Each structure stands twice: as C-alpha cells, then as structure tokens.
Image 1 (cartoon, rainbow, N blue to C red):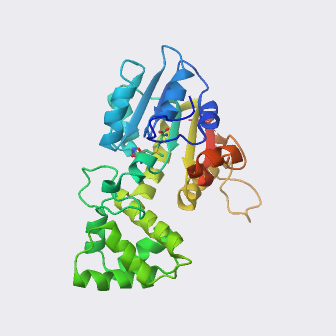
Image 2 (spheres, rainbow, N blue to C red):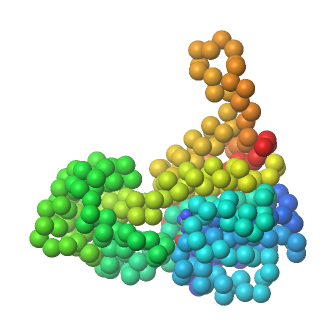
Image 3 (cartoon, rainbow, N blue to C red):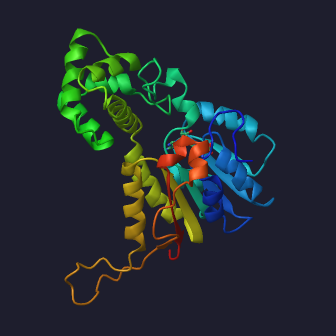
Length: 313
Ligand SMILES: C[S@@+](CC[C@H](N)C(=O)[O-])C[C@H]1O[C@@H](n2cnc3c(N)ncnc32)[C@H](O)[C@@H]1O
C-alpha cells in the first residue's frame, strides 16, 4: 500500500528506499523515524516471520498511533524516544548488530499540519516546534532567551537566510513590546521586514531554522550516522532520506568520507594513512523522487535519498 489513507503522512521514496534497505528477509532492521509508519509497513511486508523492526519516534503522538496500527505484529518493537540513543537502546534489547537502518528525516505531514504544534507559518498556534514534548525549551523560549546575535546565527546557519540580521533585529525589538509566543506574531514581525515577493520563502527558512535549533536536528543526525555505521553488520545498509540541503550535506559528506579509501593530503606522493573504508556507496549520486511521485505528493520534491553498505568492521 503506497498511500497513507488516514492522511497522517504519505511516505516518500517508499519503494526505492525499502528495496535498497532489505538484504536479508529474516534480519533485524531499524526505522529511526517511524512517523505514520508507512516505511515500516512496507518493510515488514518484505520480511519473514523471524525478522524484527526496531522503530523509534520521539513524538508521543506518532508512537501512540503506531502502537494501534502495528498491534498484533510481534516483529515490530516500537521505541518511544530519540534515535540518538540508537546504540544503547539496541544493546538494552541485546542487539549488537543490525541488517539495515532507515532514517526518513524531519517532521511528518501530521506534525506540520497540526496548528497546536507550531511547526507551520501557515497556521496560527503556539510557537512550540518540539517533536518531543518532554524537551524543556520550545521555539518561544528560544526566541525569548537568545540574544540578537544568537538569533541571527540560528537563522543564517540553520535557515541559510541572508536577511538573518535584519530579522533578528526586528524580533528583538518586537519582544521588548510583548512576548512572542504565537506563530502568527512571528509571521507578522518577519512580514514587516521582508518584501511580499520573498515573504513565503523567508518564513519557510526562519521556521526551518527554529525547528532545527529546538530539536537539535543536525547535531543528532551527526551522532546517529556515526552510531549507525557502528551497529550495522557487514553487508548491512544505511538508507537516509533528507529534505533540505543542510541535512543532505551532512549525510553526503559523512558517507563519502567513510567510503574514501585514503585520507592522505593530496600532495603526498604515496599513501600512508592505512585507512580501511568501512562502507561503500550504493549510488554515486543521490536519488530523487520522480515526477509522478512529486505530482502526487509535493513534499517529495525536496527529498534526497542516499544509501551505503557496510563492507568492513
Ligand atoms: C518524515 S517523518 C517519517 C515518516 C515515516 N517514514 C512514514 O512513512 O510515515 C519523521 C518522523 O521522525 C520523527 N523523528 C525525527 N527526528 C527524530 C529523532 N531524532 N528521533 C526519533 N524520531 C525522530 C518525527 O517525530 C516524525 O514522526
């Protein structure tokens, strides 16, 4: 089944990612970002009775729903929490190595489309943006507690927003008048310092930046990639779907660096680094959704899939 007919989330690059991931139908797999469970569902359909899927989500809403959707399938182990704890959680479950790990990064459509979560500039709601509601700091706290310079750095580093200083200044001025706790307030403030032609893109970049900062997404991604290569079996695969250039850059560099046979400086006449590549890339370039998928699901437009196989411990 391709569509999530409940409207929770339409999985992106579903067939392609599952095809790349499964090497052993009775193996142990990790879905690091369970969401609406579309990828896990197809994965389970390709696996036998002996297989197991450890599926993580830090969002309690996704976990509750998945518990209902996958009730009765003993192969599915749902782990509420951040996949940054991948290695230790697997060890707690006496799993030392796995056959495949999938990371379908970012937020689900359900999270974006729920106004009370504050992820979208399209709806009025609290400036929250936490995937894990146990986190102490939400987007409103971040805006209240950061200096103008810190805000500008967040907008520039995590949103690649060139007007970051101007926007940070407008925010720090506005918060002297009243606390900024609603998405609508933030939209109004940004709108006063951006031209209508660029407004939507700027709002998307600022909301992305705040979300990344609140959930420490890039820092978590770097840690998960390292742990994933450690816990994969030789012959096991890591498949990652990312949705913006910052994520994709981290995945690309990580996989390329791990796959490099030599890290000697380019001017060295001979190799003496003794590096043994731990992985090989599954494709030289990232994989994108085709036109048909993008037409059905516009969210697939920005998706980039990269995969690698472990070849050495
Ligand atoms: C893009 S959705 C995944 C969609 C899923 N593949 C499907 O088919 O429905 C991302 C999900 O991963 C969760 N998530 C994001 N980062 C996470 C992390 N570091 N640890 C655990 N869950 C995470 C989000 O809460 C969200 O539910």
